[in-house]
Image 1 (cartoon, rainbow, N blue to C red):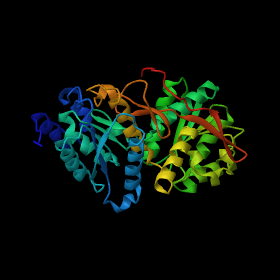
Image 2 (image 1 turned 180 degrees about the vertical axis):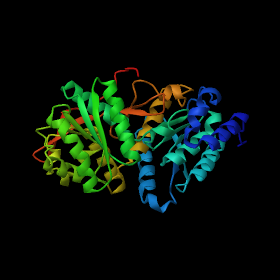
Image 3 (image 1 turned 90 degrees about the vertical axis):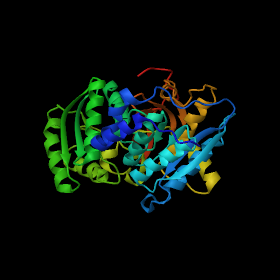
Image 4 (image 1 turned 120 degrees about the horizontal axis):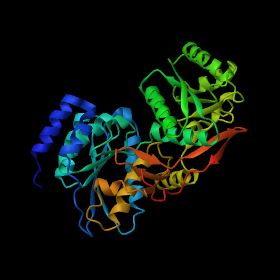
Length: 389
């Protein structure tokens, strides 16, 4: 196939070199085509899947993602996907090269890569040709233009739990966040969610990943709780870092669940062995649809003989969205306008939709822990009802 080159791509690459992760935002307004490659009725949909197959640090995740994509392909009715897999090696430069190769070989849309730097590089590389990229990253700093994120974002989770809290009358929030990039992103997400939902952040305290720093941060929050200035305590941490320490140490320092409403923006349901910690009792956190997640995991187990990796469902979602759009028979099914339809798509963990800014919204439940069991307080929506953004 003849390679497709254009001056606009060279312009985007110069911007990319100068501005790194902000390249897409700089290129999307003036240089990106308004629609993606057209589809021909009755022909297979050419999809490129970019995976870190040779990256040892990725472990079995690449295979899990491919398996999940093929599982989704088996669900499609009347739509055939021509799936071609390309190895990024977990490297941004290689991802860009493979993205260009995929487009030159006929790909109409790219699924993957995994990491945000690789996703950004791949999207910039093919932006001028109108090819959209559905990446597995959740780093909203690189979203936009022709790059759409499938990964669950802090913004989505924070908006869901803060909205629920405000409806319950818990709207004066203190935030405890880890002193690193994920913690800062989480803090920003809670602050934005509070502004959006009529709540307010009365304090935001950072801590390093050690008990002394965490204890000091909690000591700064405690007077606000005692005086009634804060009725909610939002933790941005997860089980891989210091969440278990926070849920134990907080109540020991007087920040008991009876004094302040604990809230989380990560998957607190992922570690049942932590359900006995005092801070998690009655806490509010978000999680995907249990029924959808269990159905996907059961099907994956039956097909491949093992449980899927936590991120595997993202590849399923990408194929499900592409298949649903292609099944409508529209030639512009792979365009940004089609991808961002308000009604969204049914995925591995429930309903989701892509936003015009490259981020996503996932239908999440609000849950708590009672007697060491997860209890759903507000179920995940089954659809968006066509609501706009």
